[in-house]
Amino acid sequence: MSANPLRPLPDDRFDYWNAHHLLVRAGFGGTPAEVRALKDLGVAKAVASLVDYASASNDADEPAWEPSIMRPPTPEEREVERRARASNDEETLARLQRERQMREGRDREQLARAQQWWMGRFLRSGRPLEEKLTLFWHGHFATGYRTIEDSWHMLAQQRLFRAQANGNFSTLVRGIVRDPAMLEYLDNDENRRGSPNENLARELMELFVLGEGNGYTERDIKEGARALTGYTFVDDEFVFDEAQHDPTPKEIFGTRGPFDGDAFAQLVLKQRGASEWIALKMYRHFVNDVPGRVPDDRREVVKALARELKKADFNLKPMLTALFRSEHFYDESNRAQVIKSPVQLIAQTVRSYGTPTRSLASLVAAADLMGQHLFQPPNVKGWEGGRAWINTSTYFVRQNVAVYLLTGQRPRQFDWEASSDPYDATHLVRDLREAAGGDPAPEDVATFLLRFSLASTPHPTRVESLAGFLRQTAGAPENDRIKGALALITALPEYQVA
Image (cartoon, rainbow, N blue to C red):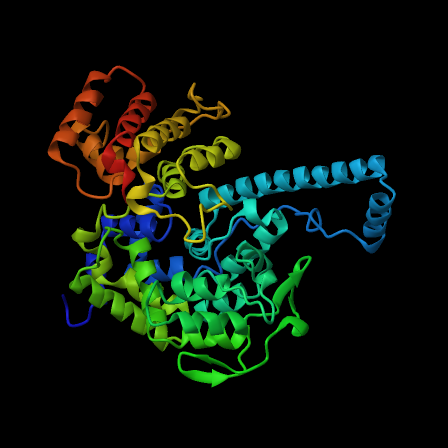
């Protein structure tokens, strides 16, 4: 390990395959032409183009969401219901129930549209790191629609994550303790003076900022819960209910004062472990998610990232820039060490191969089958990730969704929408054809397609097998041969890692 764990990669070492690695890890991959363009920028400008994405296109044509589907009843509606109950007016009560059920159905439909819209952003946005980070925060500050049952609250929370995706972690934490979706998910709307609810205070320390058992006590949790009393919401807006807030002094991390929820969040962020916990989570997400204890040499990289984060007052861009420019990020030991999430698998297949997007509803359903239901992490810990993504069931879906994207053919086992949109895969070997001045050798095509598709240099036996397939199909149209080769590659275990 260098004396500087984040020593920058020299510009002359930023070759095509390092640019490819950067585009996959800091985004969802790209076509050969996009990789080549990134490589030509040099490492500093390439990293800046991904991290400082504000000027890039974000395909932000957001649908006109309806915010008030799940609004609370008006005073007039409450009075109608009160009278109906008092007079046992079953007909009116049944009508009111039908109206509630209709609103719930419309809200579920809006949530489905939101899932498809977000999937489209993964596939098309000119700011891939923005979407990757928004999804990261969605899993980090996890809330689920089945508990919230309000699509607008989920969308508002996602808007918070996107606004601070590469922004300021401290601002994000302050926002999350005032976020209606989180307040409801962790029952802080029931956190009242004299009867504190500890859920949000506990998870703020245990999962969101410090990590389990890292620098806090049960007393800190209890006192933090008192600080968060009265933090609630009405309809779509945060409300500080002073009548339910406990204003008396609390002692948190050895500091005494009449803290409220905002002050409590700042106390948590001041703890030594805060920057290192987020640096570790980012490291596992972007660099290496091998399970178990992080080895000492890698721990030094995490500590260096934490120092960057702390020095920048929790602004995320300097840390991300240092990470993506570092020699360590591009080290061979970190290749093929991150198992693709379902979203990564889908988006990388589309973006790298340049396939049609097919049916967004079908891709949302496929991601769900593979274990990543957008707007519905499994619990407050979010998606476990890593090896938990892979089992016999999900691996079968992973193979099928790749073939679906390449061909548009609907697998018989799944109710996906077939697509007749044509796909021309020959652009993937255009550079090889130009270099050869004609048809490139099967071994050259096989080597490039495997290296481009997989996270590391392919084993010679893989090259030999794929070259054999290309020779055997020499009489078929070039596009069919390449798509057949890609179908074989995407079925490999190696295709599951980035």
